[in-house]
Image (tube, rainbow, N blue to C red; front, side, top):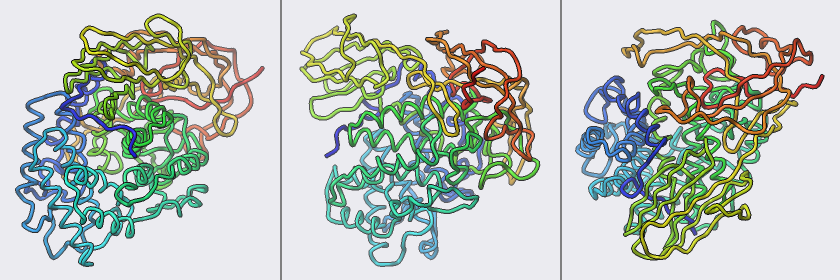
Length: 603
């Protein structure tokens, strides 16, 4: 039985720094992709001659909730125009993708799975029944084609079959019909069983495979949670076991798994694809909603507050395909890339470095996180991820004022016409918890709130910086959900050009980041608490980080990776080369060039 239900953008709105972050996204590439990128501007989904597969559905999956969370009329009109164009082209039998009938058997129906999810998001944002009816027709057609054998799952559709359940679960909730469960069974029978792939995750190879593809795996984590009800199975917690194996053999300091583009091991100079970041976030959101297990919410915070902003430029006009924990330069490789299966430009900040999937898909990250702030079940509401937000539904209003994760103070302002139970998830790393200025045992909070206006709850706690063990004797620094890195100063080299009919020009051109300072350091000590500087209109600003931490560090012998002059070696030497220095650390998400995993040195 699912623990929590999610609210929609009709009930939940961002506030404070979260709204500022969404505004930056809307003013950047996400909000303008349909104007500047031919694969969305001239897509076959709306009658054009460009991409006819995943790119428009990917983009809309984030653009739609972004538009409705911000209540931006222009963006909502754009979303509606795209949805209208897609629905107008849906065929009489329900087929919805831009593909000729004779080509259906060779069309990878990952696009069917994805557009059904995207249109479900649109229905949740708007309440427009025609969108949900289009999903019903599309998936009923999908059922008929799969059942008859006219089509089958292959390639991406075979490895992402469970994504269809986002729409199937909504259809079942609204109007259960036997074909929905039958389609669920067909998808599960033809789809990949990832539990058989675990041995492949323990020894990453320089080889591209479906079974080790990092985005497939990030999506897969939620598979059992989203599918078990329709499949008539008990939830066994398979994600717990799979997550631990992935973390042991491919984990990073920010709760990611390396994958550039397939699983890449434990080295801090291997990368992780941005699509995997936002898909892992979505999996963690749904895993927490399904299980109520707080570890999924804490992992969600770590990925969201570190890995997501790290891969995006401050203005969100450019992004990386791959990010690295120890990233001392973002320069195109003149020869063989350090990445296992990605290209020479995958770590540049640009319009579509390496490949364009992330260009379309990264848009879902912040909006879907915003929709996870509060969850509910029956007459109980929980503050799941403490993001500045306002919930308004059924005579109930809860406004959360907070600067979290930069400040550990939460103020809930509550007006309600009827009594309800209110819970607040408290992170396991919280220390010295106070509620309404009274000390309390550190645990999740539960209140029975009576009807009335002007009620408030004030919560505060402390978080302490700490060293966290990483493989091969290295350590990272974490304080609460934030990982801290040593930022490396850099200069930018801008590249404007055209490739394959796609123009890159300011502000959506490509940038190489060239280091302008030393990076070869080891830890000596860290200060007892961070210093808060205030959150600007760019919350994870690289120029004005909201939080800093002082660290004692020393220069050490640390060479380049063999064969490279822009990548540090996987592991440092053992010699100290100079006196101790008192240096400033910034949140990982604010440091575009950074050292994150370093040794703790003793003299």
